[in-house]
Length: 162
Image (cartoon, rainbow, N blue to C red; front, side):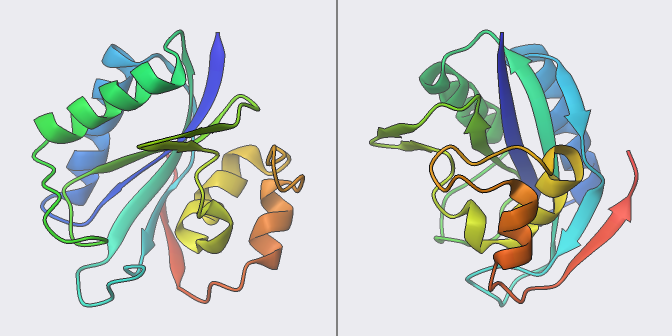
């Protein structure tokens, strides 16, 4: 079984319900959730003029290979009404693979570990909560070390404990 860290988030509609629906779909279509972080409210990254996001890190177990998992995550996004109209723009749900075991994948449409995770507090805060000592297979630093070293100044607030 493969251990995969995902980041789920969104800023359109009922953000809390969207995260809950995404978790349910992930468990049905991809595999059981082993760990989940608190939910964090974060200011938009990149395109600032939009509502704040709710984000959460998950660790799942899956039998799917990285490509099949990404295909399934994109199908869940689509089923939940995700439209890709504006790069870094508002969305009902966004499902990203952050790590897949210690695997490194570089293919069109799929890069693992997520290429910008070390630059983003909204990824590192929830990820560090559930996997502080997990080591990035390329950067050879733990999530905790990456979070302490990031230059991202965006604000991240813990909303709830799940």
